[in-house]
Image (cartoon, rainbow, N blue to C red; front, top):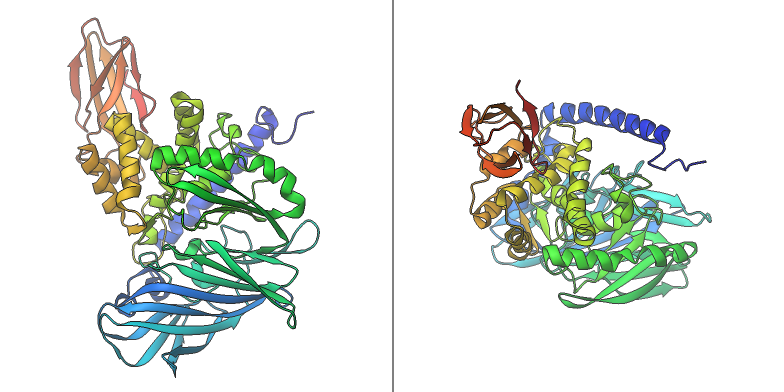
Length: 560
């Protein structure tokens, strides 16, 4: 009898495809509805650079938070070191209900504050002058939103492991870090000098977070332990996480492009045997991605893989993992080719975000494709590195079955609204298509490495990424980006062969779209540059046998 997750089982394939179709239909309806809604004031406050954000720059966070599992509450404080860029006296701090700020202090002075939904307005008694560095300490407490479906639903998961012990995690991509701690919750401003994360838990538990563990304090009277973690690099807010359970750990050194990299693994005790075997994927991943993208961005903070109860997430230097210690993606192959069963999807995908999402971070949530499109593309580059170029092509082309074309990949700016989930598979195929247009694999690799070098530890816009790739490729790719990122239609290449004449044109394209594409006519490869107007070329010997290169994200129609 075959296993339920056996992809060769016809019943499994049919059921799985039906399930995928249902999910995509529901997601499409939800996405279109969300994008059509007017932008609310709360969305504007959350997703835009308000005057109360613009005047100050975050330099450092010092977060201290205690998790109280029995009451499912938290309490703590965040000391924000900031620099005034212009005169200012009113500061916006984000903290989502039902959590509440209880006290705000700066320079020994208690500051006034008031709440507007998920935003707090903090008022300084006197204007902070430009160039001045200051600190503000924000105390808070309450019962945070509980995640119902991590990581897609943000909040705190108050779970139990297989042995009945507390197993607690935080997830907040999309919804924002302010769902569990107070901060400047927008992508453009990361703490330049990093962050301290101090997590207090019952003394029979271990708390794992980003960066390096600097020490553990044991309070015998309160029966608690405080784990002190430190990140020395800038970090995006949603990449900050807390994982609490009965963890055990081990470590190794990876000899990488930047020298010895400290790699550590954190799993529950009963998972260790399986994890030791499965986590051998990590050095393979690092080797492939340093080849394609350049130096791992966080040598100072190390690389950490942490077991959690959900699928996994790209928390910077603290990648979380819940892929059942097996290859594929929780028993599935997202490419429908069988290639996905050759590697652990979560280790590869979530770690790919260390370069795209964590090293290069979006300024606005509308540009989330910069995180997800490039990281989706990293999967097939990983495949290519170990199993060859054809396998990499098979993988990315196979994943096209997941594309919905429901709404644009680019979301709504200034509203904390991401675009379509097509940012993953359509985004990856867009990059694969651009690689074909560039037509030089060595140059393409230089472009990928250059992105990570020139935007090292920076926040970016889509326009910056588009311009960079076009400039380095020596091509104007603006219409290509517009077609795939800002619309929903896949170009349709139409052609008609008559004798030695081949006529061709694009349909379903924006004005000015003229993407070159490789075709093979009677066994001979040629490059044509279709537009939305019919063109004709002569092919001596006849144009009967026409094949369009499969690596471009286009539909093809032969006109009879």
